[in-house]
Length: 482
Ligand code: BG6
Image 1: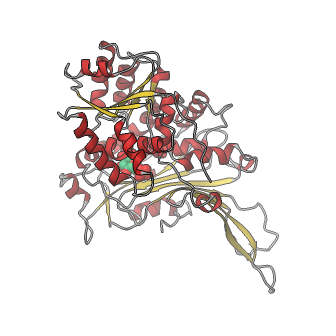
Image 2: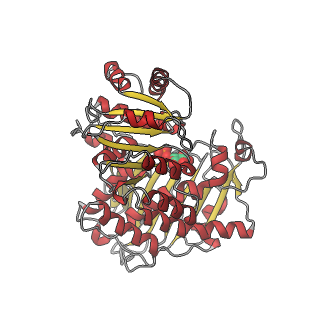
Image 3: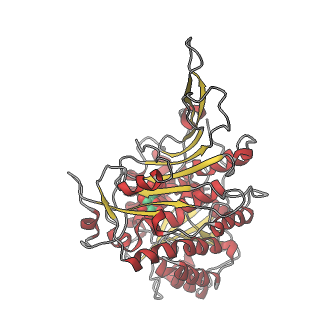
């Protein structure tokens, strides 16, 4: 199935932190793929800005190398790749000084959209915003993109919001949570709001519980310093898992537009029950046969940072009171699985008798890998021998259903094009981010006060035993990761 491509208007995108890992691994390859598809127009340009003293050619060579690694050979014609690289420029720039700013000003065109992409530590957001303003680089057609992490608690997020809103209107600020750009996450909205089937059942009366899993096999790798201060709660739960929870639990917005969506998501966050310590499990991966323990990777032998969290979350509103949402995320687990599983309640009465084998209906939305959905339903086991029941999956893999040449774009491809279009539906509003921190802060504070330490789990496992116990207490089980 060939996707329909609508080119965006010409733009100048200034990528601060252009020599950094995220820029080279995600942002620039995403732009290159959009260029190859004809969505980024030939009149658009990308200006890398960073502290390194590089010529424009040296930057282009660096990007060419990064594209080799990020985009598998044969995905796009070499001429398109070269065409993208020709659209790159570079300015050596100091976020906290005056070096480079006049060169940047000279490089920008007046009659095109401007996007300033902050792919830098949040500590530099304020400096960059100040200087963009002081050098009069902000036009009405300007957007700024703020990469994650957006602060490390509510207080710092509020300070960042204040710094940005001193120079930009909220409609110009694009706070990225790349999970919102994932194709299947957007599909969640289509499943819920473009079908009549699920909505009547989408509440505590019919839904027994929901499980949201984001499991990774990778460890923290070279990000030890960042991760030591963040941990899974700040790195994954406050943003990615929270966004998934919101999309599952929110009321139908009256339109698919930025504020209508964000108003509804915000209501979910504000309705979350505070989480008691007994409802949270923290874990940290230990050493494996061929992998180091997290403590060794961060370089903090005594670290009490978690690489795994599982929690039981309640939502205090009419729709969800009484339906628990179980969230879990962790690194170095048995498999890479991101999915949302909605388990429905049993029918009120079994006409097949007490001994009929029974399994609940489960709707599974698979975010990665093998994007798709399946719905487990009960059927009669074929053949003679009475009425025996069996549960089977109505399974839809998007790749199979939509064709082999289906290209599921990386989240960044979609999100960057939305920035240029000025569409904020898949970006977080300032109040939403603050509310998410306001919910996670007390959980983290309680760990700190108690001086609690995460339980060590074996790499390649399903996480700490206590996470299984969290559900067992409620008479439930986590879905298998493998
Ligand atoms: C990032 C986190 O935001 O998301 C990483 O900082 C994590 O720790 C990553 O590995 C997961 O993203 P994805 O798209 O690979 O599921």
